[in-house]
Length: 186
Image (cartoon, rainbow, N blue to C red; front, side):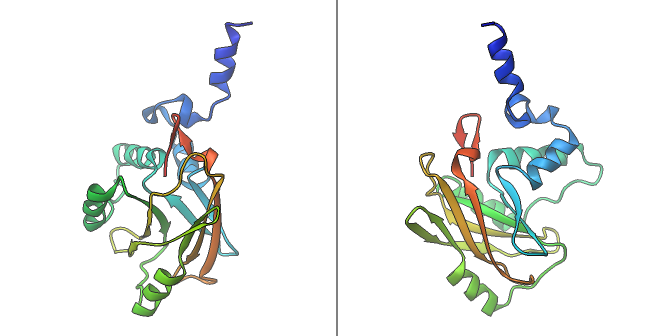
């Protein structure tokens, strides 16, 4: 019986804990990027996908897609990558993909800065900045301070998402579910 316990624990783990990224199936990668602890659709129809772009499992899934694809997944905006390289320890990025290029007006930008917040318990943090969608990377990337801790119960985002019907959205993530190989990943 004692020999079976590790096997049962291994089999009960989600695929991202049980297998390295190079052994993830295409379906598993898609699930990780669209319906996992780090990615979910939310809001009234049309629903919007939101994901933690800087979470290790998401980055691993996207790296695998780039390696496997005949038509490679576009690299994110170079300005975004440079910013992230310099600030990774202090921030994380919440990403919202668009189906087509959206121009974010000055009014949209102002409203997004004022209304997009992260709530952790009684603490509220405003979005620190953003990277708008560009032709080669149709993703709105919102930068938040890295203030979520493993002891927190949930992190809630109240977002203004320009260019979509019903732009005021809210999404909740249970913090305990955002663990990857024993580490909080955002």
